[in-house]
Image (cartoon, rainbow, N blue to C red; front, side):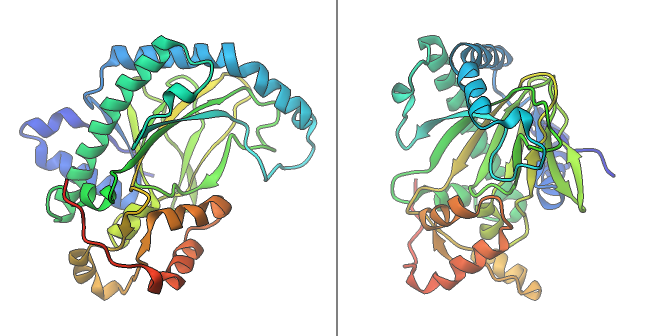
Length: 318
């Protein structure tokens, strides 16, 4: 199998721009995942975020996780667990309004670092959306406008720790799924592996790499690109040793954004006859909550059945 795509974003500024754009296009079309280096986010900041995330887990969440494991009898399981994941998490919302002040036990320096990190991630997400537009032949800013809705995009970070698991063959760190949203940026542990994607019916490791940002595409981009780019099933395998950190930041459409295939891509792809639905993003999320760990196709079908109720909205200009 080909090597997992790793893309050096700094090459966009020189003679290798065209070949780098081709690498991004190929990764979007054939993998749904790729890893970015030289992405513009400070390595010192990433080191600080990693240190503070691990300290916060040790101080505030490790004992809680151990109590959860004990109360559910997870250390003694004898058969596969299919209704929960071996992870400790909390969610930081950045846009449209931050919830950082509402999260208990966060130290001020952690809040400050995460706020700065989120600014860099938002900039990178919007840069990637514009690069996708360029590769797809869409006008610059098209994807950002579609995502905007009336109040701007939803953007937040799921902070996860995957502690050592005594029975990784019986319980997943995170069960297989596609992501519901737009573009996802993952800052993952560079020492403890576990993230895998499904490619050609085989599970492929996403390699841990120092100071990289992993990008993956969500269901909304599959719809907007009319299937040109697809969201991909992925999972996290729990490990018997080592605590794996993962910060997954989701740059998603606004709640009232109307999602539908870009008309120019429908024309170009007409011969494939792949017709995706038109829907309001929040309606899709309400459906997704109950069906996250199932195939995406029935979700698209369910939204198609609701399609007649969606009022086509003009794309906001930002």
